[in-house]
Structure formats: C-alpha cells, structure tokens
Amino acid sequence: MNYPEFFNEIEVIKVQDPLSAVLGAFAKGEYEFNYLDVVKSAGHSCPTVAGAYLITAQALKALYKDETAVRGNVKVEFKESLEDGVTGVISNVVSQITGATDKSGFKGLAGKFARHSLMDFDSQISSSARFTRVDTGKCVDVIYDPSSIMPSQNMQPLMQKMMGGLAKLSEIKEFGELWQDRVKRIFENTQSVVRVVEV
Image (cartoon, rainbow, N blue to C red; front, side, top):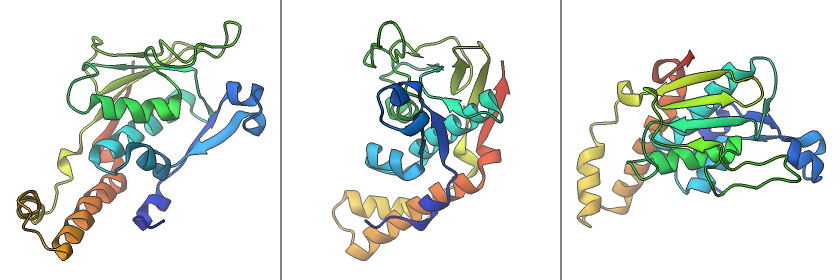
C-alpha cells in the first residue's frame, strides 16, 4: 500500500475504550487512531479530513490533559446541519475517533456504553465544533481555519484540465502531489490553523 510518507509522521490519537475492554477487543480497552486510519475510512486525504483529525486531537488533549481520552465519553456539537457543506465528512472522522454519533450509534449494554445521542448538529455555538466530557461537563470550542495555508498556484489550471479530460497522466500525478503537499503543510502548521478555547 503506497501513500504519502508524511501520513506516518502525524501524531497518533490514543484512546481508552471501556466497551472494547468489556467485549475483549483490546486489552484494557487501549488502542490508537492514526491519520492513515481516517484516510482509509474517508477514502481520501484533504484539508477537511485533516482538519477533522486535528480538531479532534487538539480537543481531546485540552479535555484530558495528561490522561488518555475515553472513547464514548465525549459529546460533540456542530454549528452547521449534517447536510451542510463538509459537515458530514468532518462528523464521520470525529465519530470514528470519539465514538460519538447522533442516532446511529451503539445503544449500549444494560444502560452503559451507549454511543448514540452524543453528537448534535445545528447547535448554538460560534466555533467549528464543541467537545464536552460527559463525566465532568468540561467543554472546549475548536476553531479550524486553514485559509492561511494556501494551495499551489498550479493546482487550478491542472484541475481545469482534469475536469475537461485533457490532463496527461503526469499532470494528474502532479495535481495529487500538490494537493497532498497542502495537507502536509496544514499539519506542519497546526498552531496557526487550529485554536482551542475552553468554555
């Protein structure tokens, strides 16, 4: 399996999942997600998928500090509707890592470990997303804005040639490399594209 090398350089997100421990999936319920995991689930790597991974990672760091984040113990709210823009793409990545879902998630065992009703849309927030610990009520707002990381000027003309069916194989390859170069630069500049605010 071939993919950009920088995927392997991105910090992993470690979680402790009580449900997986009870059901014997992982010892102590401890496992981790990496960027490649969410790329495979999304089917692509782009600024949106990168942003979803980043806001989740940064929010969990802020909520749990030196502790391991507990999967299934985080509620997530979005300002936009599920159908708006790329909200669905973002929510899928966030859900994969945190376990939170709106209605489709696991219903629980004897009243425990439920994952549904932990994700809301059309919320009255001003940020990209709000993450809340269910056990403590502590929450943080996360703002993601990659506009400072500009794409290559060569991407637009290459895109036009591709959409018109006129691009050579070498140009299609170049477009993909330039696309991933921007994603890489977003990860390299996390502090300038992601802001976490404690609520």
